[in-house]
Image (cartoon, rainbow, N blue to C red; front, side, top):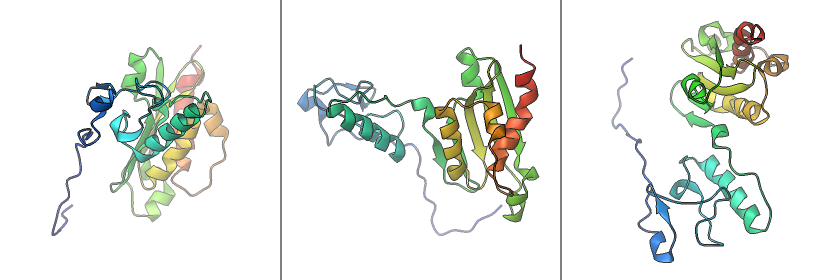
Length: 208
């Protein structure tokens, strides 16, 4: 596909810019180009916290917001749950959109999981067809023993919206069966989540 344009914006390869902050001048430890923090976002200096791009493994606004909540609650004397970075959704606002949360099949295997994978091709989506989109997929990665969903990967219209359901599924440690039992509206692209789960059930259910 050829697109005619006056300008092309290349927006990749972001880097942390710590120089203006001068954390070392305050005795704050830096490691790997980022401010080092503990599970509650506190630096090595008691009472000083860091969140967002300067400290996070994810340069994403929603990750920074979650880290800020953890830092604020901890500063007020509470014991919040640390950020589960495996559960942080990531979206690419391209055309079509792409989004993912959790583990890839390869990452899950490296962590010792016996993995099953289910894919729903977008060509089978009536809603995607009406929007003129036939290319793409929704992929689920699950472990076979209990059917727990480990990762979701999407290339489809509205992927950045659909990934919210996937993030909730991972946070609640939902299983393939629970996703299948969730009634999805039709026709929608998000019902592809249920279809991908159906595609994976034979592998999961036959597992001893």
